[in-house]
Every structure is written in structure tokens, then in C-alpha cells.
Length: 218
Length: 299
Image 1 (cartoon, rainbow over the protein chains, first blue to last red):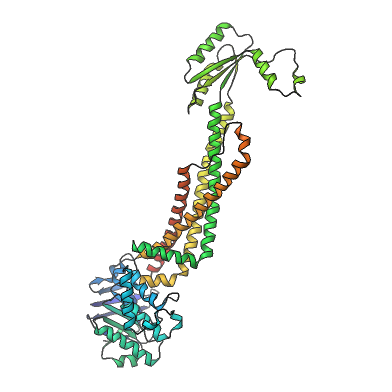
Image 2: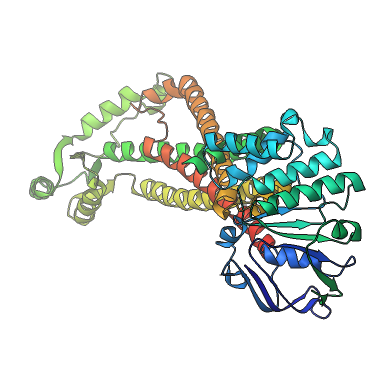
């Protein structure tokens, strides 16, 4: 489903952030992407959803050659994915319900479907009672659950999570991790970037370990 | 259609969020378009006056005092056979003197109590009211001025030539000013839109992250630019309308004697001004959104 071949990414033109990395992830797989800060985890994810360009190599996602996409058609790739960030990236001037609806408005779903799917997504993450609350009035765990609801609401086949538990305490982190496992059970391919060994030990999933831009263990 | 509706909702929310910037930009457009419109109105009226005067222009041929009957006949024949001539009157020296005296104010009459008549006899030639009548007047004037028995010819040619030059200059000036104002407006609107974009930078980035098309991102800003152009030009037209109403009310009576009136800008030009303003708004916002998206895509 996801194939990365000999990818090199440099920010300043000299030191590679990703140095000839290759990996393959099967459809429906749950993979941990681990490594210390600066190892290149976020860069791998950004390349996968077409936010960063890369200097060398090839990246294929569901048969799409990411390097060949232009800014005009990159959205086709992004619509097949859901992305969850460490800092949640919620819109502060929108309620919980509106934040989740927004992801569907962007892809042009009709209002009725948007309402139905948003309810369903919020029910899955246990946030229906707080649908009219603004993110600033919610805890970190609740905000991350909104972000997960937003990522899953368009039923993507791939979910990329960039340190989704990075700002949360251990108990809440476990809850959030379980939500991802639930999504995986429903068929989504999950790439879960984390530097937390506690989280990695929680699940019996493949681990791709990065260090200084290289894959050191897979 | 849904993208457009959703874009329109976002546009309204953008405007409400950045009310001050939006209204400042609209005010600037209003002033600029109003200036351009006022000059256009002035130009139209001057042009109208010129055409009116052109229609009133008649050719006067002054005759030498000792003109022979044969020369007189020759002149009459030339005038009769000239194209576009409507009619002509012969004014004798005595008639000219009488008319001159009757036009003088009573205070000046003693000064003109001359013992001889200094005025020459003349022919007053009227031309048909066509657009190119001035050409025929010039042509006949050229033919007549070298004929025997003609002392001089008058139809205010120099004055008309100067006025025509002035109209051409005004046209160039209006085009140049219109161009400069459009350029200025493009910069102003594009900066306002840029501010609007930066105030929503996080939202735009998120939109792109979750799969929005570039068009979906651009539409609200393009609509905002167009709306600024529309609001600015409509307000400007209202201002020009007000100015026209005031000028007409205050000064119409002074030009009525010349059977003229202050005209408003012609309808196609009015629509043209609104269209131009909307187009400038669209162009300016396109430049801003294009630059912003290009910056994001360069990563």
C-alpha cells in the first residue's frame, strides 16, 4: 500500500534529514514509526501526504507516485488519508461539531451527509455531549479525540498520526492509542509516529525505527 | 455550485472578521473610482458642449466694400453649389450696422456715434446638422478665402482646433489616469486580501492538509476581492450621482440659454466602471492567493 524507495530529503542542501530510506507498509497494517526527536519521523509523514518534496527516490501510496503530483492534484492523495498531529491543529473559532464537519465541507460533501457522518464520528470518539463546545474549553485528550474524529470522518484508507500522544498524560495516551487500534481493526492502515516506548509496548505491531534520517530497524 | 455557496459563506465570515480592513479598502476604491468618474463626467460634458457648438458654427464671409456684382454672383454660385450648405443670408453693411447698434448696451452707444459705417457686408452660411459638417465648413472656407471680393472669412477655426486638441488631450489623460488608478487599486486590494489570507493562514493550511482543492481555497478570497470592487464602485457611482445632481441644480440655469444641459455618464460607461472595478478586485485577489499558494507549494 505504501512504498518508499531510497528517499533523500534535505532542508539546507547539505545534511540529509532522510538519507536513502526505504520501507514498505501493507494494506491494513499498523506500524509504529519510532526514533528520537530529529530522526525524521515527521518528515516521512509529511512526504507521505505531499506536504514536503524530496530530492531523490520514489514514494508510492496506493499506487500513486507522490513525487509526480503537482499542487493542482495533490488533493487526490490527501483525500485518501487522515492526518492527526501532536498539536491537534483544530480551528479555535469553530465548535467541536464544526471542526469535524469542516473536513467534509472541504471535500464537497452535501450538508445532510456531513451532519450524519459528523455525529457518527463524534459518537465513535465519545464526544457527542461536547459537540457545541469550542476546543479551548476542552482537555488535551478531548482535543486529540476531535482531531481523530476529523481524520476518520472521511473514511480514509490510511491514517497518519504524528506524535498524537506527545502532549498527553499516560492514561489519556492509552485511550487515544486504543482509538487508533479500533480504526485499524475497521480496516485502516495506520502509521503511528511516536518516540514513546511505553506506547510501542502497548501494541503488538511492527516497528520501524529511524535514527538520523536512516532506517535502523524494521 | 456547492463550492461557490460555501465560498460565499466563508467570504462573509472573512469580511466580518476583518471589517475594518475591508471597509478601508472599499473606501479607497470608492474615492478612486469617484475621481475617475468625475473626470469622465467632465469629459462627456465638454465633448457634448463641443458637438453643440459645432452644430452652431456658421461660416461668415466678409465682403470688400467695393465688390462688383459679377464677383458677388460668383460667390453666391460657389456657396449654393457647395455640399452640405443648408442656407445663406446676405447681410448688407447697413443691416450689419443696425444689428451691431441694437446689440450694444445703452451706456456704450454714445461712444459709437460714428459718422460712417465701419462694418462690411457679409454672407452668413448655415450648414446641415451632420457630424462631419466642420470638414465641409473648412473646405468651403478654403475655397472662398482666395476669391475676388472676399475680405476675410470667420468661423472660429482656431478656437475649435484648440478645443479639439483639448479633447484629445483629455482622452489621453483619462486613459492614463484610469490606468494608474487601476494599478493603485490592484495593489491596495491585493494587500487587503493578503491580510485576510494571513489572518486565516492556519485554516488554509489545514484545508490543504485535509484535501481541499486550490480552487476551494481561492474562491472565498476571489469573491472578497470582487465584492470590494463592486461595493467600492457602486458607492462611487452614488457619489458621482450626488455631485451631478448638485451641479445641475446650482449651474443648470447658467447654461440653459445655450440650450445645453449637464449630462451624467452614459449607461454603458457606468456599467463599464463597475465591471472594471470588479475585474480589478478579482485580479488583485487572484495575485494574492496565487502568491500564497505558491509559497506553500514551494516547501
